[in-house]
Amino acid sequence: MRLTTCADAEAVAERAAAEVARFLARVRSEREVAHIALSGGSTPRGTYERLAAEPSELSATEIWFADERCVAPEDEQSNYRLVAESLLVPAGIAPELVHRMEGEAGPDEGARRYAKALEEGVRERERSLPVLDLIVLGIGPDGHVASLFPGSPLLDAPEDAVCLGVHDSPKPPPERITLSLGVLRAARRCLLLATGAGKADAVDAMLGPVSDHVPASLLRRERLTVIVDDAAAPRGPHR
Image 1 (cartoon, rainbow, N blue to C red):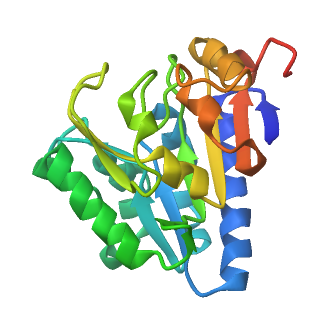
Image 2: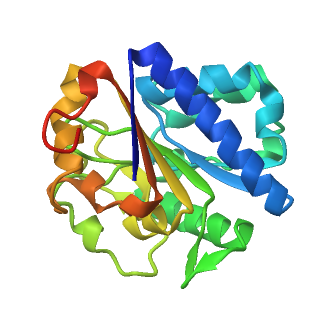
């Protein structure tokens, strides 16, 4: 695992955008197309805005999503809307390269459709799971990532589960769609971003013992890059 601490949220966004650009360039040097999954949230948004200023950094890159709320794509709670406003539209990314989760289809049907799209669209496999090149994640104050929350039975989904419907999210709205923990762990790299003092305890817990009560701790640490600001920096022995 690589942990980088930056002065503030703006510095995190700059560092994260550079990290995304470098990693995708390396992937595209190995094959024609890269696959990245994005998350919603205020912290990743700054990274997307910086990537949008250099659209060539996302050339030959297919864009997927880590999770979505079960709302229409134009809804203010939609992760797709946030990514579209901060990255897709400003960068002029071709619609055929963007694969959104259909939240309006509901958690179960939306998850089924997205699993099918991923299985058909991402050819590389780890066991039976599609391998995304990079997944950009935030972390909740409770240690959740994507829409995988502490103690959720979805953390124990079958090993071949690709995408899951969430019916009881502790954060509104209760219905969501999320990539499975298996897909997060199968990715070639996860990039986790955290800013603000409200995330410091979660970052500390993530770096501690592996636990279903801290879903972020279940990510594969040898494939994980963490970028935080000073306020969210770990305060324990992990620093």
